[in-house]
Length: 328
View 1 (cartoon, rainbow, N blue to C red):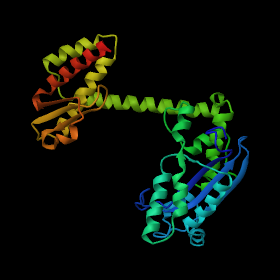
View 2 (cartoon, rainbow, N blue to C red):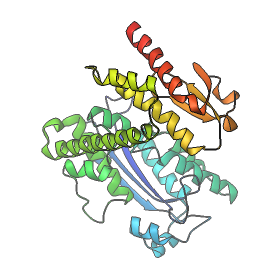
View 3 (cartoon, rainbow, N blue to C red):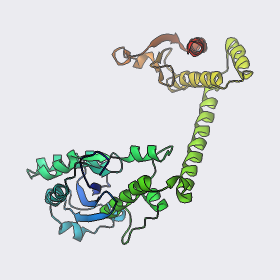
View 4 (spheres, one colour):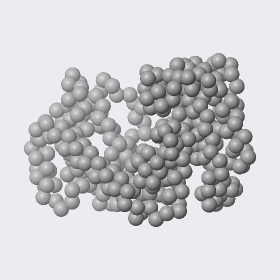
């Protein structure tokens, strides 16, 4: 395949893991494995699917059964995940696969969790480790290629490109691997930018983000203005309202929000620290009772202020930023 100039085939994978009842990706075990291998013309050469029996918590939760549609009987009669991975390793070796593509950042830490639990029960885990070592999350690459504003579920995207599971549903390891294959193939072989189903998803995401942004900004404004402006702030506020640029107003609201929200959350503190880590959004306002010098050494500006004087701090920071913007 021309992706890296070294392998002639691509491998798309999905793994399902135990879940529910507080099981995180740091404590889960493998339930099923699905692989799809295709050639440089995106012709599928082989599919692989197998369920696995967990070692530490073999009893499936109701949430897990509902999500994966796997039965307890299927899991009880399944081999250990390392044995399943042994078959997967043979397959990737057959096709000289060097990278196994997955969607999202869940699979690698989840497989590492399975490895840790294998170690605890003193079982072999070399094959799980082998697969884990060559996993590559391509979600960000695909999102960037499609110019989407945020990640979209594999189910939605694959559906936009015409994929419907032949049997079962999503959250089946093989079906999700086939969905990932469909997305990748569509991105690199079709004019997806004119795919109306895809464009609908893109528009919905953009509208959702813009709406969330408006809600967040309004919430910030209400909190920022919940404490009355002092005289100096009023003059500055009236001035920036008349400006053609919205940036000074956004910065004033943002900086005031940082101060006011910290003051409201810490009503018993009389002194606070205003901490700037960069010239954009990484700003913290911490009450003196919780301030730790060591944790804030990377800050570019730190100012201690009395609660009643926070307005002056906001105005000084606005002036600093105005000077920086004028230089830029």
